[in-house]
Image (cartoon, rainbow, N blue to C red; front, side, top):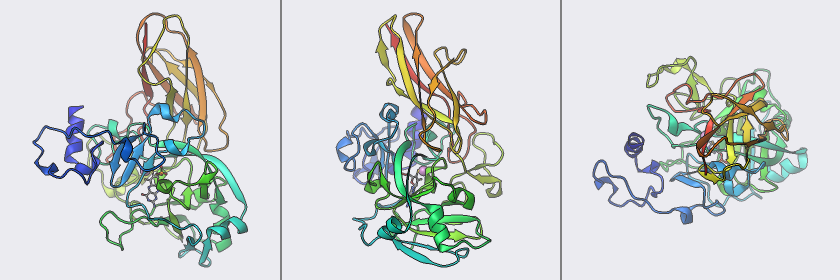
Length: 406
Ligand SMILES: Nc1nc2c(c(=O)[nH]1)N[C@H]1C(S)=C(S)[C@@H](COP(=O)(O)O)O[C@H]1N2
Ligand SMILES: [Mo]
């Protein structure tokens, strides 16, 4: 733990939780080995954010959920994680908002208002999992730079909008189209107006699937400003970074999109596994596509105290990127034996699935409940942190909670 903290401190003020990045006046004088005490920052959260959410950074805003906050099948806006790379656009106006589709592999260039999208195309709603590629980053060793997400940079809301496919087809795709890229209206932390914060994308086949949405509503309401109001892409099952917020442009590309955060270590993994701490050459890095199988225990909270002789209901969520979760198991003996859980089918493709079971504890004492999901391809969550990588992506280790029986 002390190593971890030391690392965070070296990484700069901006990553110290519970201290406003821009408010530590004499921060550079802090003696080595000391940490800022910090304040209860729940009052400094953006409007509408549950005070139990964890603030990792406020410039840019990065806020994650705790496991027990993700107990709802459909995540409410107040518990939806926020991951920003730049500065949120000021007072976006939905009535004048424009989305332009262009690019070397577009047959034409077209611009739509949100009303155009609503009236020219059919509207669809899906429950879709968005998980940051860096969710779980805080567990990697040697540590990776960036927001030290624990387990809460994931959510599954109901999204409403038009199919990305329908809009792309309205513009027309040339034969050589292989990728799309997005642009948004957020601005760069450097204040350089020419610098793009992030512009990622997905291959055409992912963009053309039924569930890929250009969305204007989350849970039947306007999308919260922090989550992309008034318009965003929602690409379920892939790293959250593909779901462009404050969406104002989509480019249809004849090559893999090359916007900021498509190359280097960003959202890329060593194509072959490497020893922890290795330097990996550019050409040996591969773009992350589907997120791996994963699950959370959302009830009870870790640390729950229960009475001896009483069965305990345990429940949570499970998801597996582009795939279904096939089975869910829990262990109370540190992985020696497993008990299977009841697992619901997803509400639609790319939604997370609810699981539950009842546990009888054999005697008084301290226990841990470990949860393990298996996807439709037979891939299983690892019990410990999986393959180290330079930016600390794709940690899908089993979630654990503590229980005291007395
Ligand atoms: N324009 C824009 N889109 C963006 C980002 C961003 O910083 N700017 N962050 C991306 C990342 S890394 C993630 S994980 C998701 C997070 O979406 P959320 O903040 O709604 O949870 O948005 C993605 N879309
Ligand atoms: Mo992300």
